[in-house]
Image 1 (tube, each protein chain N blue to C red):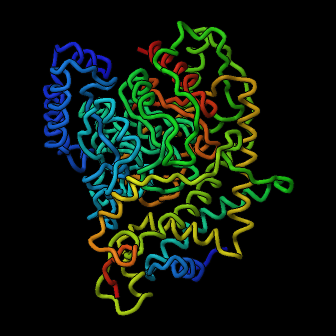
Image 2 (image 1 turned 120 degrees about the horizontal axis):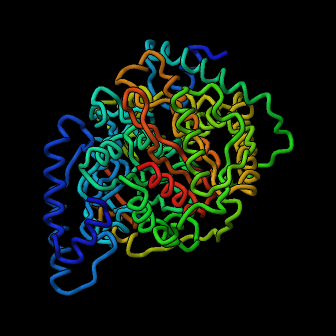
Length: 471
Length: 92
């Protein structure tokens, strides 16, 4: 069922929220053992919420726009009284002391929070293989990764265990797994959604995003969770449109930018699909315009320096005193800190080391400051491009889902998985991945639309039409 | 060129123990990554001024938000208070 169908069924009384919740709980019970998308299911709480929604309806009260819709939340999003571990040993025993704004908004809209989903440790990874709670298997092919870091959320939606899930996207962690699993993943522009109650990785790039089976469903959830929040000073005070009411009849008058050189050297199947997507958009009435974003190719090195530097600072709080594992056997403060920070996994430690190194007085100017300045130029490039076009079309990822363990020998090749998506976080852009065809192995291919901050409706509309046309 | 000593120093600054084996693994990976970062040197950034990267167009009031309820709720989570401060368990 789509989210719209669930809401209609619950509000009309055709089905109860409890029936819907029990259906999805059964799906999780059946499918999760082979996929490992959920790390915890809130069965008791979810059923209590569903019953409360049914009671509300019985009293004749108006139900929220997500009435009875079960939603999974990534394991770095706080929900009071529930564990939030970032799939790390460091936070293995952490229980959220308060609820994130996004979850508050979902609950206020009568959604049902059904469980927390697997992820790369502290959201650092593109394959969901760095989770201490085990790798997630792609429902399309269980031998392959679902992408990451919101791999659990993507796999849960793709397997039909839940109609929507929240993820976070710092370099593509919503869009890339959506592409790998054949679903829709949307990351709004920076500031559109509150980060209050989201465990920080890199504060200037982190954004909450939505994973759903189709564009309309993702748009509806986005509409609910977007907006200014007094608890997050980086959230933007600007009215949130009814995204689902912004879908136009066709794409006449819409200018779609095709960045010069973006497809050079790309996997031929993905290149062909992206070209086909452009052709399809043209058939739908859009005008294709070549745009130049020459410095966007430097996004990945900028991304790894800036986000690692921010991570080294953000993760400094896990010292056993302020947060995280506390080693009680240490004899002095130095060994206490070292022992208490030992639970970080290899990838997290590596990013902290990269960030710390880039911030040393010897390297600060040539690494961190340089990356920050290049980021400014990349943002300017996109700004210029968006003065000519409404949206920009790119592939979501340079490859389709790869086999579990395939890239273990060369971890840096994993960083290339974010090549097209991290541009959006460096530029603070809105981005969406929508499925468009499959490769020769039957694996889903995603294409991505970029749009300016606060103009999410443009990318949602373009993706909506492409999705409709590809069915 | 990044060396094993650089990795160990960064680990020390980050208050983490980096084993000999880990330093060996990271050294090669960081060398490759920072080789990539070296590509940035080719870009002229002389006149670039840093702004708030993503919020430049959306200025906001920089004021503290006081939420008495939230503060009370957080204080209630601590087992004990002493002189208007939360008392926490001794770590050493």
